[in-house]
Length: 343
Image 1: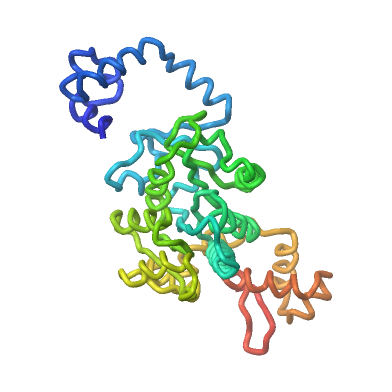
Image 2 (image 1 turned 90 degrees about the vertical axis):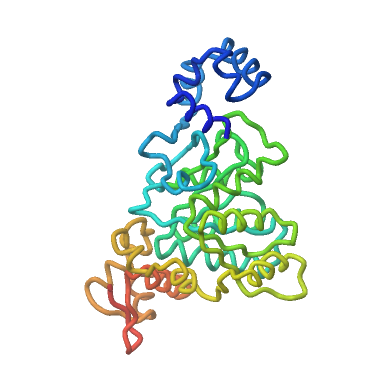
């Protein structure tokens, strides 16, 4: 908020940064102006940028074309975004982002729901957004990656600090598979109380919609849904058991008008999307070796699942799973006689 006031007063960030203490006082107050000028005397911006770049971290300011366009539409967009990984995921012309959030202590049912929808949405080309926390967040990222999809993790600390540390492997896997790690907090900034709530508005901010899988009435996932509603995003929730404490958040949202989700088409319909509109331009991207083998066979002629199992020398359970994923992405079509062809 102070930054926005400074830009209005001085016209741009550089002029505001170089303003005298006397010029700053009317805008940000005496104490803050004094502290800022003292900070400025001891801060070397060039050195800091070099330090950040050595860590492989990019910086996107509001004025840059690569800054996530959806974040510019929220009431309090971050001054800048720190990012590791794939910046192209912010291109709203080519990618559709969807947020999956929920309890850090989910039930087996909640884990199943998160895996199901993260995998199916990723399979049709949606980018899965979450916070890399324990529970629903982590499972959503993992299910997306297992489906060869792209995912964005929004952290409540610096992007150079995998948090929680037990998810360092997941952090690296996201980056190695074309995903992104982002934060509005500077590199080296450790987790602090209150930062996760602030982080949640970014999860909803870059997503077209949010699904709260599980959570108590005090869950942080509810704050993500509230931010989403305030930002004009669509909120979704699955049917949940009535005898579970972590069913409270989805039930509250459903009573308030969230869209009930039982299948992935419910989400796409709620967002005004179709499978073809999402995946047609990228339908053959990121296929695994086994998927490539199946597609290559089906490009020659139609095969049943059993025949594909023999021709590709892949276990039938794996073939059936891959065919389902390929069908969801619009790559293969199941014919009336039960055989498959390339769509």
